[in-house]
Image 1 (cartoon, rainbow, N blue to C red):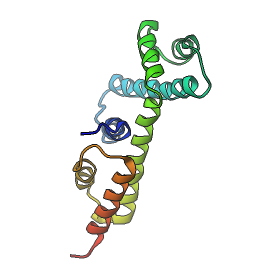
Image 2: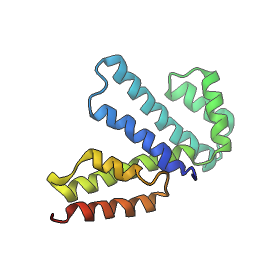
Image 3: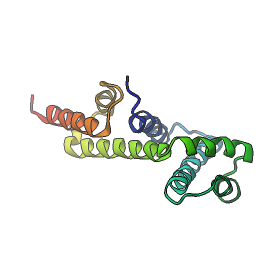
Image 4: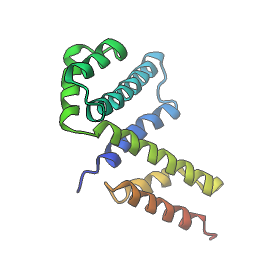
Length: 151
């Protein structure tokens, strides 16, 4: 299996959001934890692009996360930031993958109306394993076409 980061990690972020949408966070501490994770990932996007587009230094990236925008300890942030330096675009890939899956879900829901089934959509997304996102989009388009046909 080829590990397409946008697909694999995008699916992981998608499922976290799905859990929140479906009300899995029954307590405020649980929901706050989810929001904290979302904040962290937003900061990762900024740091990823700051490092690789704006040429931020290691210290600038660490300061952005520790001083300005997260509740993380400096030691945790250093480990994260150092990973971003050697894996350009990883944080962006996660978010792009999640957003593509969400948009495909919206597309399927809109196209299928009452015929839309979330479990079947998830099966269609997962059936072929890790894929480039454009291939996944073709698969979902075929799923929509097949599902929309009258029986």
